[in-house]
Length: 92
Image (cartoon, rainbow, N blue to C red; front, side, top):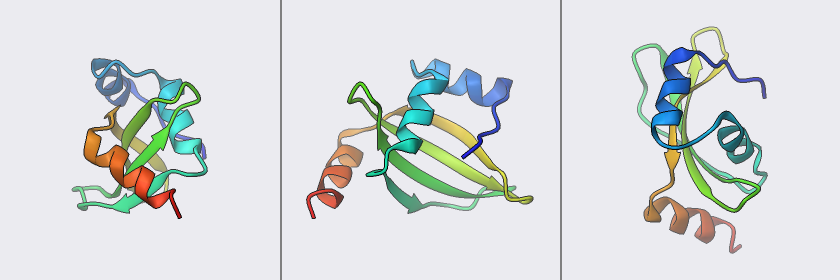
């Protein structure tokens, strides 16, 4: 998946202590949990909980723009509830 990065979403992830690599690794996690979330003004949105190579859990809010391109809205370390949901899904 090719993501579109710009100054806005880069600033948001950096504010939360994450790098582009962290977000891309979480999205590449083949065990990730993807849930549909609210629809933004200009995009369908998904909450993706994935794990980095280092073992850190990350929540990514991913938007699909009107022209179908994926765009990271923001990302941050996953809260405990997300980690539990990820582990529950992957217990099966």
